[in-house]
Image (cartoon, rainbow, N blue to C red; front, side, top):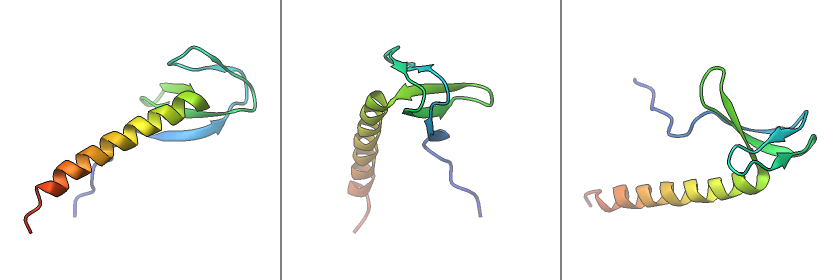
Length: 77
């Protein structure tokens, strides 16, 4: 059987081992704080602060809920 395609990129929560910069807001992510890391490719990754990551998750959840509602409405009874 075929494997389903993932809709979400490879994503992890990491503890910063050194100072990082949020890709969206350019705010500093200090060593020891949690951040969201999204792997854009084999050697490319983007870091986001906790504050921005939580907003991103809310937006993604809303979009997925919207898609699910649209698909569920089309199911035959």
